[in-house]
Length: 185
Image (cartoon, rainbow, N blue to C red):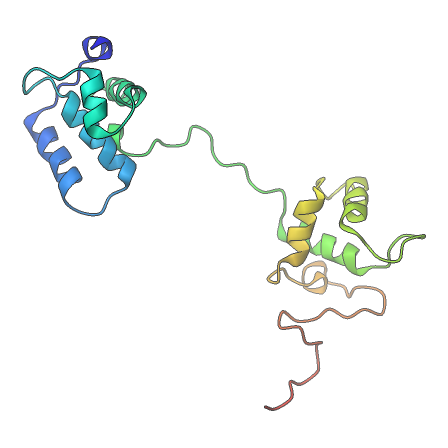
């Protein structure tokens, strides 16, 4: 009963009707429906409220969930929609350091000749060389592997405006070399 005395939930008739509509009709997220049921159970405007343990058992949630929903209701100033909806992010998502140009430069490096003493480029070797290049952000070998495995990346020639050096040719996404016709079936 402590949180109910500290942060009592008093709903208007209109808010109650809206919460009942959220819990009984339409397609909504399970967490939204759960928070709406908690608000309805904690509402003191319709009479005496059961204890926290009874409400938690009846709704199948923890006592902490009851406390957090009541706290959020108080923080939003009694706004029912803000309480049951998902929280907005405090910080914007961090943009990926891998852009189209970074992908193309990495692919061009992987298609070039490996350094002296190595037969081929490994992901760990590419990771070391990427760290040495100033205009490419440091990437982990697993990120480099995902970039090289991605079949939708543009070819180095398309992004860097010059052909890759060496005898290797860049294959198209379906595995064919450019200029070759697919045999008739």
